[in-house]
Image 1 (cartoon, rainbow, N blue to C red):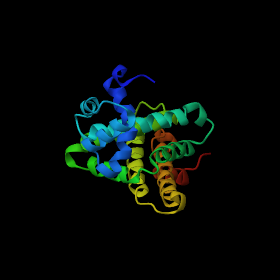
Image 2 (cartoon, helix red, strand yellow):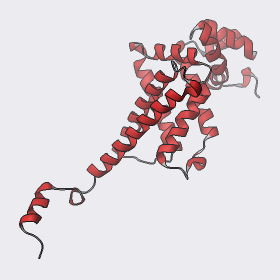
Image 3 (cartoon, rainbow, N blue to C red):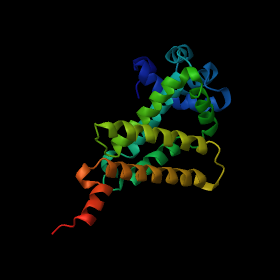
Length: 219
């Protein structure tokens, strides 16, 4: 592994991020958490502080990037290809939850930081990027309106699932799993209805056409 002096700032942030997240449970997403992470990883504290000079959202963004990377390594597209789309997305979300398991307090504090009005644009962007990463691993190649609607919906489902996850005291997080399954079923129903609605008009049901056929049946 390269020394800290050989890393770019982005790489250094990603290296420090898991340790910062662990410390954030006690110190919040703060300079104290960065110093604790630097000490535990052998990085110069001043260098670590410079890497996260933009504050809490920079720390959280780096942590999310490590979760994205862990998900991509654990569940590459080819490992999911044979599964139904719903199951692909389910496994990807669960992989992300496994990556933050045990860090619920850090996650709770991160969600609170991201919910601040001044951080909303960055938080939305991060949510979109994570949803995009999941859909790409799930094999989605849409470039039209579907590209945006799928990611927006999944970002919302994922955010809601995280909110349930942080307070879930059920065995094996079964309440979170059940919540996720219900939301994913809703996505599938929506996508099915949307495909039917977007079919060519001659393929969609038409009440006028139906009544016309009753009145003037084909000979």
